[in-house]
Amino acid sequence: MMLLAIGFMRPDRLWALLAVPVLLGVYLVWTMARRSKVSTDRGALNVLFPKRKAWKRHVAVVAAVATIASLTLAWAMPNGYVNVPKDRATVFLVMDVSLSMQAQDVSPTRLAAAQEAAKEFISELPAGFNVSLISFAGTATLLVPPTTDRGQVNTAIDGLKLLQSTAIGDAIYSALDALALIPPDPNHPNDPAPAAIVLISDGESNTGRSSSAAAQQAKSLQIPIFTIAFGTPNGYIMDRGQRNPVPVNKDELRTIANLSGGKAYSADSLNQLRDVYNGISRSVGYVKQETEITEQFVGYATILGAIALIAVMSLAARWP
View 1: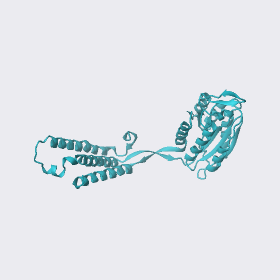
View 2: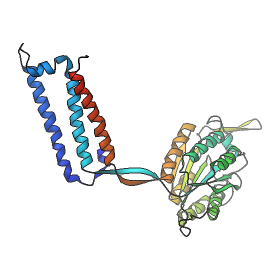
View 3: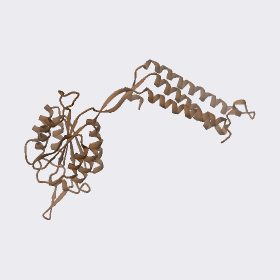
View 4: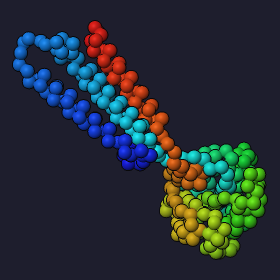
């Protein structure tokens, strides 16, 4: 499968791989001929390679042929894609702190799990990225403007407090307003700042401005929104002794992601949330870059050649 994912700058040199099946075929024929020989007279080859060392001989031959194959692939100058950190971008982390986030369907609570995963997420972003934190319930609050200071963001995440209502649209507009606070790139001061919004919530808007209009505004500014619907259908909170269901609602978040050109995710556990954040981190923080990977195949050939050499030396040694 690895070979299907790469290309070659000199594919015309791959013809040399024909030597691999030829050499293996010759060895197979020779091995079968030795096995079929019915004689008590041991020939010179049998003295050098007794039957009890046959497995060592197989290892030596296969490793040697694999070495030739790896060197041939290196000769063809392979290229592939590697993840390279982006030079600069800003991630707006927008977190729901409405009362439903105290539900314990995700241990210990939705909010506590979201806080833990959020801190892990920002630690995985490239060091040059700015991170901004916005919390929202009935209103949205910019807690940390775009900064590279991860400690400041972590402290603000730890300090999140639950409040009433949910205003997702206002939260998105707050992130868009904060674009003006992104520090300019000293190397490209006139270029627009690349940015993305990561929004985690468990419900739907019940106050504030339209989230769909906010998502369309983000689209016009080329700011994708990655939404995470966090929670389970069985979540509930206790209010004055009453059990109030707060099932996760995915519909509005999915619409926001689609309208903005982002992607919608869902998670119903801390581990799933971590996986989602890992995927988003790779999407917004890294770019696939084509590069020559000849040295990798030279490295494979070196290892295989060493295995072949050790096997040959073992054949001549006296130890079993």
